[in-house]
Length: 122
Image (cartoon, rainbow, N blue to C red; front, side, top):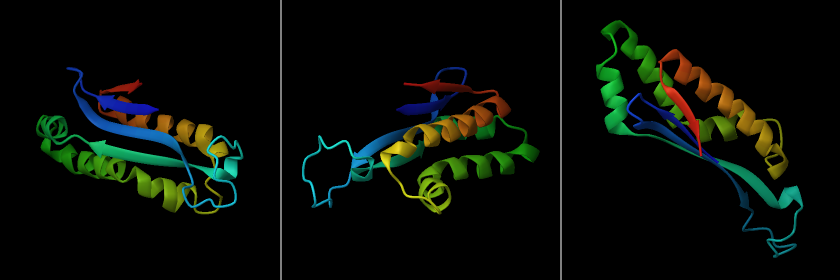
């Protein structure tokens, strides 16, 4: 699933993709059709799009810019959040996809609301 934060002109500021991937190194059963959740894991990538992000930053009052920089820097590092925080004490299997998606939605909707932006799913 692809999740976006967009501005009022529909320009994408953040593009985050949540997927389920197959463990390529899984030697015990080399068939991707195997539905065992342990054979699959959740992966996340995110990208802050420079031009619309920069326009957002420049249109923000100077005293609020540091907060926006920190917020979008954290969003750029969502993969780190997934592996270093979310999966710190649990195994990354495909069974966690819906839980990760729920947390990700909450985060991105909160950012969109805070900065008067739009949250979109594709």
